[in-house]
Length: 382
Image: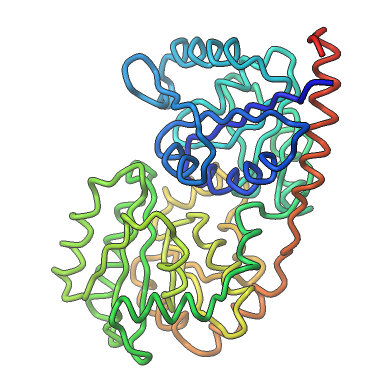
């Protein structure tokens, strides 16, 4: 019997992080023939993992279609990719802010079994309602949320992107990262982990953080990590922070996010999933790392969060994994609370309750079974 042909795709860096451990596991499975397709910026991350991805671009060089745009060229390109690869089963990432490779493959799946690797609980994206048949999600709560929002099947498999954290020496990673930054044990490190600037309220939230840091008595060192989709914003952010009298380090070009996160006493973001990366690092650390502050300082940002994930608060907040600043004038006080020992220890305790098991073997068994049934249905030759 021939190997089951699996096509795995990703567009966003978060999708690449979620896909990477599955790629590694599938490559060790002789019963599966894997093809990986990726758009920037996921392409670079999967190529670095040895996945040898096919680069997916539209004829005009773009990689996605903004909301309300013409999807016909995107769908045609996805259909051409499917004709060349002829997979038995599809595994896609979940991108955002428009549609791209992942959503186009689902829309042109042609009856093949389809799976989506969910990174952020409750998240899904589709062209004209063509969702994946099954969403592979972190836990039961994510499964309930995803099924309730979209009426799709969802299977809890753990957090794929965090499976490798079990092998990390988090304390050593933190010590090395802080030594490289040149910061002593007494100086706090605050990280700002950006998202694309076209997210409503995002740039205003960054401005609120800058103003809070201008007045904050702790005088922290601030790490800036720009989103890969908007590298042109890096210099602007650094200038704004330096103008506020803040010492800044730009770590945007570092391929791995974990050293920057491990160095931080407080991670700030609007609702990026790097907050959950930090939580899983904390879960594998013997000592508290710090806490997270979510910058939801405008109503438009809070509406965007609700529309994206179906919940009023970012992932983890209800479980004690972070604080929320909902007004500009509250950012400084929330930072102060997050830097305190009480919050650090409470965050660490909450992080230790995260599910750390990852069921890669279950996913592979599912792909094999679905791929074989799909091949039989389409009359594919053995």
